[in-house]
Image (cartoon, rainbow, N blue to C red; front, side, top):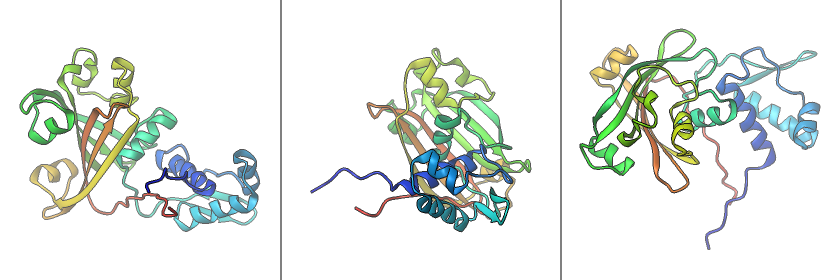
Length: 249
């Protein structure tokens, strides 16, 4: 019989929290993470469990321990790909959508006829006006890391006029929508695929063709399962995607 899934074990929850702080930029290379004693006190776990957390983060290459100094965030040798889940979690946790050192340029923001896949997700008619925002995200090295297109129902243009302005929305598009329309995102889904880069991908990301790209389609929904945002993000190779999951049940 189907059963409700159990929550992640405590040490995995702590790992996910600290990993999220690192990936969102709240903790940067060189910053200390709590000691096992402090972690045990803060989270109400044993020091043995806290030591498992530190060991797991070290095994992932996220932190390094120096005797007599403590455990600090290390520089990532392989950049991480920020999924829709990562961005959404960052907004909820810190009010920011981008990691420290990241920034975005909005290439365009306008009303355009919805293609079939967009119309299906948003629950509108094909060809009906939809809000389309195209952005390129850059890392601390000023190199483009991803190009993404976000789609919203055109009916929201009047209530949320910033969606049609080619400028950044600090709290993120769906965070802004939540304030303006009350459409609160409660869950999302990321669909990951790979394909060959197009001419447009190469232009936006500075790629040399032929090249492979990772494509992430993110659907963010409200409590009624209505799509608030449909996003398609394209990124080059050399970035890991990391997911945690429970296989105990």
